[in-house]
Length: 477
Image (cartoon, rainbow, N blue to C red; front, side, top):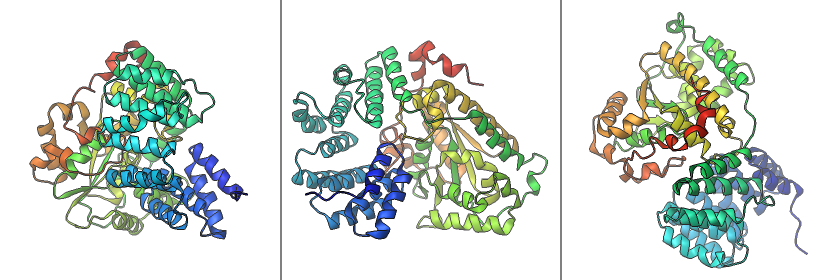
């Protein structure tokens, strides 16, 4: 008789399926505290850590799980998924092949390998892998989704849509699978020029994504932060006593060109991008513990220096002379705090036409429970208006924030590249104009854009949807 898994691990699986990675990690740790060699707990913990962006710890956990049970195809497949997430595509293919030697018909592994071939811009290899499994009368949903993505990549959006429409509404599938089906259908329909149908598919996907958003609470939070930085008292605020002139913070809204801007800087031989680091928000939260944000006003120069030093230690590049770029967009909320912690650091705000930005957010399957404002056009508009008001306040407080408009950047690449580099204190380098050649791994949603030369065909994307986007435009300032 097969051994029954610990009930806490069943709950961890359910938490992962619902997108609650933190709960899943906590449940796995509870089991591992009692049975530190439980391979299933290690594997599920790895999956949770990967979802939380803790990639090094996740890889260590799945490696431990495989060492304890080498015959689990799903463990090797999970390791491959994680390698793909981190941009190690060739290593991922090898890991998928190890899994398929154990179980040649594991649908999750097959779909994962196909998606990795797509990331390598090899849709024909993905198609060849998936086709035999589409001949079945009722292909597994994850195989179907991967096959549809392959058809889209091969320029066959109508065929992709047909596959997906034959399965929807898929009410028996898990919620995340249904979300993926709808967002993939939206992409197929949009590529086919069927904008009404694409919009309807995106709407269905977002209807399954609702996780609650309170615009009043958001406004109150930003008002409380601004109250800590009165215009007539900013120069009197304490600051950290530390040199941070090699630090650059990129802030802004999702889908506003921030990854592109970071990639341009990172392509410079004297610069390094650390991506969307959680270090600063975590250290700030630790500094005020469970207190109100207003507790920040009680910090003195010594305490600010301690926080800043910890941040620098956690995010330092091997070469201390390099410019280091932190692209955690949510740091826009805390620019006043950043100025206190890193008084001579640079801040870049990436901006974009809010209609294009809003549509891009609405049409993107974002991780569950993240960015709850993104699941309706109305709340996207409300959040953007609140964000813009908050940034306008920071611009009033500080005159040296560089604004990089996405539209200008992609239409006049060299001029804006020179502007960005000069602002960061870097000399001009031709490699920054060929940023896609750097070979750098990018883990954000914009990974496809920064792996190829700059293009402009997304500039007026929103115009193709016409009045369908009125709920967004009506909320914009």
